[in-house]
View 1 (cartoon, protein in one colour):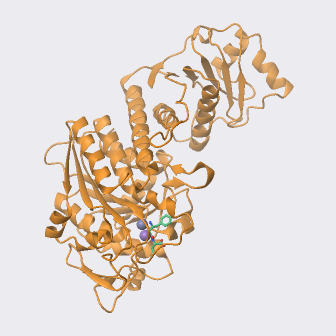
View 2 (cartoon, helix red, strand yellow; view 1 turned 90 degrees about the vertical axis):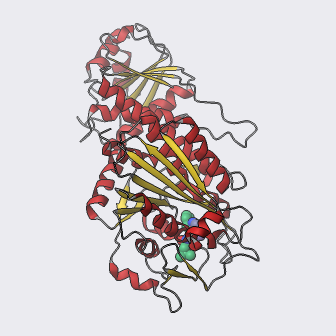
View 3 (spheres, protein in one colour; view 1 turned 180 degrees about the horizontal axis):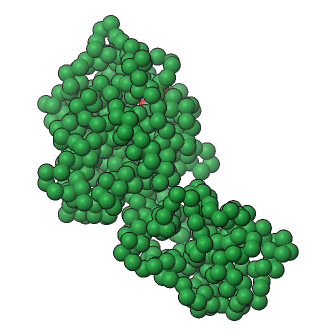
Length: 493
Ligand code: BES
Ligand code: MN
Ligand code: ZN
């Protein structure tokens, strides 16, 4: 995808397959007026007749127009308010991309004069469009004989000043979009392909692609030496070996403390001996979407060339029942030295994460964020619209919430009060791995909090946000958008 910026002096000379005009019913923007005048008032007549009301996100496709170099026009309504909401901007842009691609257009030109988004700078609009056009091009192709045809659009021109700041915004948006697509691809791959070893090979490929990235992979022997018996308890029943994958991006000064992101990479979660019911169990191939978001984000960070240090850690394992599997009631010692009574082998995410989080401490991190499809309870609480956010630092939580809003990839702050900790009491170990039926996403976060005392930490439960079920089953790539936005803000973009 080629995305460029260009101011528009005379709309009649814009040579494109498709002119995208974002309009209100009075055609208040000067480019909209000029377009209407050039094509013999076609647009204003259509509005007068009631064919187009310019409601927010409403689309009218004009396949042939006279008086303009442009081959087609897609009109998209923006309502009658002087400003639109950020979510409405996305809706408008997606409607434009969809209409132009259905028509098979290769080249589009997007006019943005008089498009004002509340609390957002103009550069935000460029970043957003670059991201949305990039993710619109995502296709799952790995295991289908006749994949959907690729997106027709190859070139996008955005009306705007072609300066460094705007070009940077486009680059950040496009890089984020590519990172999201990488996460979607990994998430959508089936469990028989996307194994812990497969995740490791994808990480190693990143290390080969970028000089700024180095990758190391710990095998089970090494993990045992480090005392990661909690993580290893999850893989005990599987024929696929577990991996701890470490992706280091060095874009900052050597002494800069790294931002660490840790992903749950359970490449398939059967529940283990605490076996899950059969319905929709296939969706547990998505139980590595935290890991996928780490790979996608690390790739984007390298692509954006951010001036900071980032470490991505992936705890990759498959959760299977077998003769060698961990049993309910088994007690293991984590790398931290704390013992855990495994009352339910289906609460395995926290078991792989706790050792990865202890390992993260080795990097003397600036902060640590873990990302995990951790609990069904989080889906009950928040649905698919927000990730659950837990943190041992309210300022850090507030910052992530804000960056999530900017990225249109929102999280919602959940409590991590001491009141819940008692639910993890065990008679036979320092803690149990489950906290009973109440507040399941909170007690899961409480469990993790016992391994993150030495640094600033946040936990994103993406059980609801990571993929869509039903007819449009597929990964969303979340929260790569939030993480990229946060990290680029930390780097001063
Ligand atoms: N991967 C699941 C969580 C999950 C379930 C995510 C459904 C998305 C949709 C996790 O490993 C799990 O099984 N959690 C259990 C925890 C329980 C045993 C305390 C759950 O949520 O039921
Ligand atoms: Mn589970
Ligand atoms: Zn799981």
